[in-house]
Image (tube, rainbow, N blue to C red; front, side, top):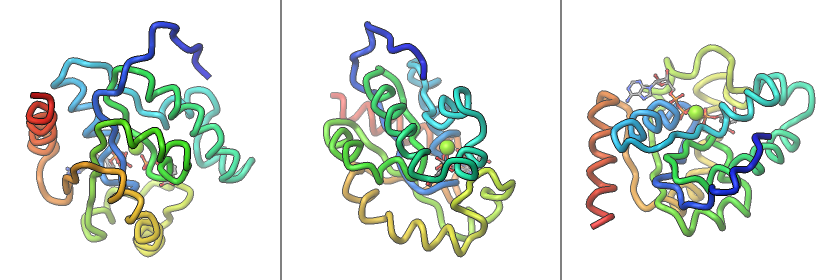
Length: 174
Ligand SMILES: Nc1ncnc2c1ncn2[C@@H]1O[C@H](COP(=O)(O)OP(=O)(O)O)[C@@H](O)[C@H]1O
Ligand SMILES: O=C(O)C1=C[C@@H](OP(=O)(O)O)[C@@H](O)[C@H](O)C1
Ligand SMILES: [Mg+2]
């Protein structure tokens, strides 16, 4: 894991949650750039330290991945950043408790729109739209409960959605 930065105890600017393929990583990066704040993608940090997520699942199983993920999420939530979580990070009860204190946006996407985004085999729990739909159905109550706002990414361009999210952050910061 990255060495904790002793100065890092700020609240996140924004936490993005939601289904795999909803656009958390892409939108998070864009929103952070617009706000000129750091961006953290917890999955990217996990990959940098442990190698591919698919290999982690295959070699050590999902519980091991979730334990590593929790550590990275807890650290990221202490940074003054836009934070994109992996889709299943909200399953952790400590993360659910942490998110109650933060500005949380859920990104959604329809099954039709996600189909062409989830190819490539990078997500071990999602090997097709049926598996994706079943996974998202079980998690939807958690995403809905934790998010203050939801933005759908199925049809609008990334720049448009990013501007909408920034507009909402500015409204809620006044
Ligand atoms: N609004 C959008 N319109 C079209 N494609 C998008 C949009 N948002 C994300 N994507 C694409 O969908 C894929 C998954 O996005 P990603 O940010 O990795 O999702 P997540 O982090 O939620 O799993 C990427 O190829 C990305 O470019
Ligand atoms: O939904 C999930 O359980 C997962 C989503 C992935 O992240 P994205 O939501 O960014 O695709 C990644 O963390 C891992 O494959 C598990
Ligand atoms: Mg992602």
